Each structure stands twice: as structure tokens, then as C-alpha cells.
Amino acid sequence: LQETGETQYYGAQLPAALQTFQTLLDQQTAAGDRLGQADTLIWLAKIHLDLGQYEVSGERVEQAQAIYETLPDSELGQAVSLRMLGRIALNLSQSEEANTYLNQAREIEAPLSDGGNVAARSGLGETLIAIGTLYNDQSQYAEAVEPLQQALAIHRELGNREQEALALTTL
Image (cartoon, rainbow, N blue to C red; front, side, top):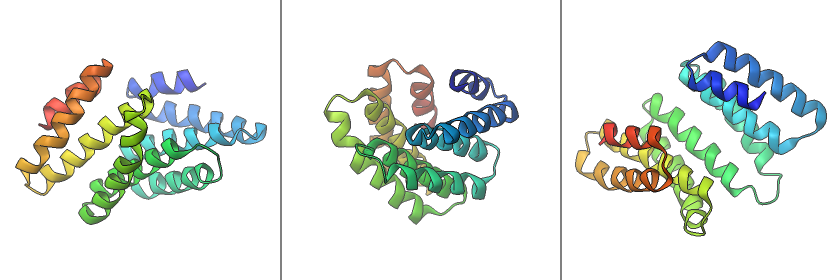
């Protein structure tokens, strides 16, 4: 179901992806798969964010964050939660909150990224794009350049063409 939901999400079939991930969440809950639940809650939050349902998105992130906090070695999940909260705040034009969340995510992801964790590296690139977007939204274009260039380098290194394109268009 995870793969199906991701395919639906990236194919812009958001209602179908929402249903698929909800079914997956129900299965993971029944099986007691806490990490799976948290990860799926993040996917649901992404979908709700893309649908403009910011309150529901935030609730899903907070549910995921509460689970991540109970799991060992869940720093990366906590960083993803913070990045998502930052993206929600960006969409609600809450610049100070967005800045706080995104910088907290970056503080977690940077050392993990330096340690060779590819998921952390990719996440750091996404966080840097969000930080660049925040600066652009505040008309601080010069400040946006550095995080966006860093994100571009990371995503080029990882071969992530979608995020590379996003970094370029945000620059």
C-alpha cells in the first residue's frame, strides 16, 4: 500500500492517495507498527497540506511527532515533523513560526547528513528549500540564495531531479 499511495501522490491523485494511506495507517495501527504509523501520518499530513487543509495537516504532524518522541533513534522523524510544521506555517504566512520549525529541523538533519545518512541529507535539502522559500516570501532574496544553492548541491549529489528542479525554480 505504501508504494501505491506514493505513486498516487506523485501522480497528483490526492484523494486516492489519502484513502490508500488511511487504509495503511489502519493496518499499521492494528499491527502495532508505531514507526510505520508515524511515517504514514507524515504522508497524510503532506496530502492534507497539498489540499490546503492546514489544520488537519498540523494535527497529523502532531500525532506523528508524539509517536516519534517515544521511539529510539527517531531524530530524523522528529526533523521531518518539524519541517512539515514549518511548511504549514509558511502556507499560513506565519514567518516566525516557520523560521523556528525549519531551523530546528536543520539543526537535527545537518549532523545526521554529515554522518552519511542519505535520508537526512535529502531531508536537509528539502528543509533548505523551505528556508529559501521563507526568505523569498519575506522579500529577502539575497538571504535566500545560500540555502537554495546548498539545497541544489545536495539534490544534485543525490540525483534527486524533482527537488533539484524545485531548488532551481525557487532560486
